[in-house]
Amino acid sequence: MKKISALLLALCLLAACAGQETNQPEVSESSETELIPLVVSATPEPHATILEYIKPLMAEKGYDLQIEVLDNYYIFNLALNDGDVDANYFQHVVFFEGEVAEKGYDNIANAGAIHIEPFGFYSPTYESVEDIEDGATVVISNSVADHGRLLSILQNAGLITLDENVDIFSATVEDIVDNPKNLEFVEVNPEMLTTAYTNNDGDLVGINGNYALGAGLNPNEDALILESGEDNPYVNIIACQAGEEDSDKIKALVETLKSDEVKEYILEHFGGSVIPVE
Image (cartoon, rainbow, N blue to C red; front, side, top):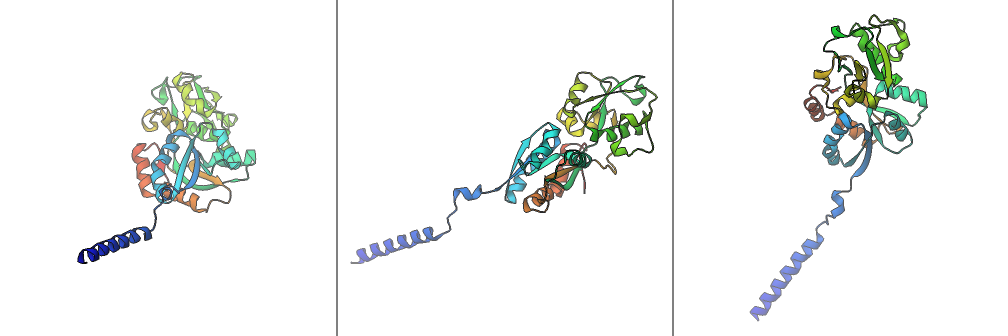
């Protein structure tokens, strides 16, 4: 009888344990992957590299950061305006404002400033500004939004003088009033600038910071003339769909990119060639 009682007691205990296990909250396999998708288009360097770094940080906030890498400047804002992506990270604010004005994009907005990439002029021909000869060829981007920036760099280096009445943001080659070295300007697509430099297609090549980094150039070390990062208006931004600036997902993205951890990563990884902003 005692044996039967002991057996019954053991069975009851097993049943109780089983009941406790089944009453515990179930952890579904999908719960760990139920992150909210956030699709951001970016150029390879430095933007996509920075976004890759923050992927786990965004996952901690509940977002699956999906990065679409593109290299054609002129399709980013079109895709964003059409709602194909949630945000993009590739452009400075002057380019953004120019695109909105020129193409009439009404579904995109500036969600926040992230960093500055000082523009540089690189030379396969010269080792100093003093070496630049009469009639040297200068290759620049055909993006009008970059022209004022590029020309102001050359003016600050003493190579040209712009009309003092021109708005520097909208200046073009036609606004040059003094060109003592008779520099000849050639325009190419932004993504072809590093190719022009590699192929010796110009004596001076003005290259965007992101394309320079993507080609293995270090702006701080390799540029013959480098733009100053101080009081620089050409800050790179996160752009999003209009009305989403204060959405949880866009705020999480901007706040993460502006966090102290990410700022430290940017400075260390890019050796000062990419400068975070406050």
